[in-house]
Image (cartoon, rainbow over the protein chains, first blue to last red):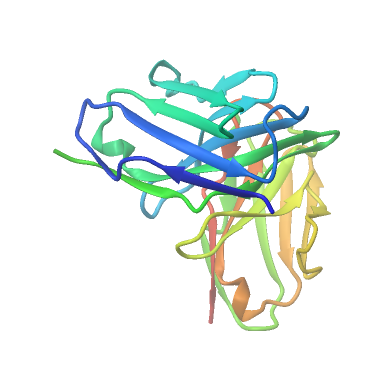
Length: 122
Length: 107
């Protein structure tokens, strides 16, 4: 059974750094073609892709947030960590992590965590 | 960035109706498109990959078609459990981008 779960603070102050951890099970991030991505969704708005880290440690970031984002993995703990610096109220959103599969023509987020709501407020 | 434009942004239909959602890419993305369903308060769920392939376990009333810049998502017979927001997503190039979503409601 594949599961992912996001954890981290629910409230951060403006200018602070957000650190979110995605803990997963049922798959390994050393398997070729496997990645973990982060996607966020402001309340009532659409999905926005943030970052993706692959089995080979290749990392991709949203250009609009690249200067503020870092994604790392700890395969021994089955965890992926996202940091977002200099938080602002516009960063208030539900943050999801999701497994990403690259397999031939298949290139999709096939399993998602439940999401965690992060509010940015002083 | 590749912009994904979905229409309509919302729709209301009766049980049993055929529902169609369109997604237009700002440039040719071949068939590099996925469709997701998001029920209220829940995480998105992958329904369709590579524009027209049904993810395992997804009911056959859902289908997708299209290539290039124009794509269509169809529910052949709307069911009460299909109330959700549907998103297209392109993976032809980074950054990965989603459409603005289409909220489907029951009339």
